[in-house]
Amino acid sequence: MASKLKGEELEATIASADVCVLDVRSAKEIAESGTAPGAINVPIDELEERIEEVRTAVGRRSVLTA
Image 1: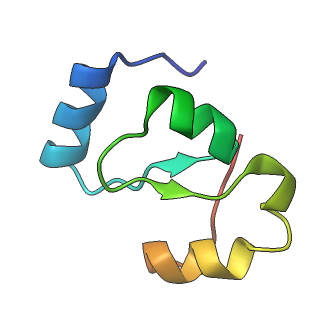
Image 2 (image 1 turned 30 degrees about the vertical axis):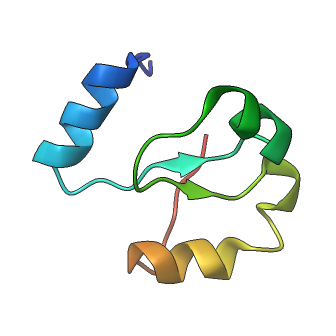
């Protein structure tokens, strides 16, 4: 089961580990609440068509999403 991280916890995790944050919220949602520094934004309804962009950005051939 995935756990939820608060903003400060997420920033600390990103800073201390080799992780990539994929923000799948819409542009409207991000404008309302912001996003994590360094996160890649690909709205969920565009993810399938932009998966190669995500793979390139994270430097991996396989990408898992949930």
